[in-house]
Length: 303
Length: 237
Image: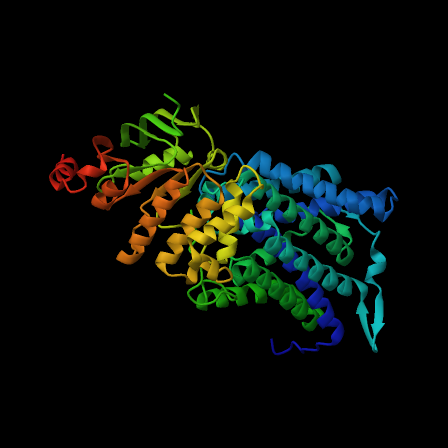
């Protein structure tokens, strides 16, 4: 660590915040589904991957963004609903362990399908590459994607806060996340609440796919896999049981990852995940309920 | 004779190998309070869960307005006009009092008249109206129970099921809750009251069924409220 000269500039800070915003959206996507289904969806990254392939497919055929982005949304949301219908719904009464293992299986299945269909070499999603160019803000060069990611992330989170806080389906989702059984007894429609969570989580995965392909236009079967593992760690770090701490956890790990990635000398950047996971382990040793939950507020996982 | 609002016939509920309710039959019509009393584990809560569709009866029938609701999901039974005030109140502690009430709307068949129902509920429970913005978890036990009943009434039910509403309440709050049930009955609802406080329930209800070990032991009218011997023998049987 002593050789690592910390040279953090504004550009790194902006990039780190942008990555934090993207990871925060992934954390919300994972947290929403966990809230109503008590299901940790390890296959969330493969939703993002599918969206990235849709974008690559569009740019390979020279289609405009107005086709590529809707295609990406359609593919990801459909896949999200299919996952729920085909795999999660029949397993809903099973133990959380069974459901977790099932999501691992779905994740590897989708990766293998991508490998068979598109090959190991990867496709290029280049339609939005212009966003990688910098703009100069008061003398500092900042990549456009960082600004877009921060703005879009803030906008999505605001929209979600309004949806969850001000609408009927939002209220029903929050109630179902707290006590599903009682919510059902009151007449809350379980199917509608779960459907809403699955669709919103899919929409977020699609947005993440668009932004991640700008950062990394080469789409391979393991696209977004590393990001998902980091986000899952971040979600656990923040506090799995609540949406706000989980989101903060996602942001924190994205921000830390971006900052360390920018600060570490290139020849040491392969140690980046090790640093992050060591930090996660340390935090969980001292605050097992999560970094951003208040004392005594951690709900026990209902099984 | 007209069909009763709620009818249970030969109800049997099993949890695995254990039979929780064995051959229970009862009827509740509009403007009636029917009590279901008995010791812990007698099968009282299981009966309510079976009515709501939260557990599937092994045998027997539950009919609302003459139509069987067996096999329906709780959310569907709620929309048939049956509301439950669950044991332990089960309010959403982290939601505001107002949000808890709004959740009650989920069980309504129609949005029409919801404002009137809110007004009636506020009239019945002024304490609820005064704390709309507070987190429900900060209310006292008695206020939480009032909120749980209010939440059920906002659904505009015809049948109200209550699972031990007096549990853990101060004696004065028990009075408030029992008085409220009279008002609710006089509005024409059918009330099925599960209670541990046998004597008070027998005195309040139009008739009370005593349940022990899942079996119906005895049916008592309000005139037997002071007949302690009958109650004791039913409990001990």
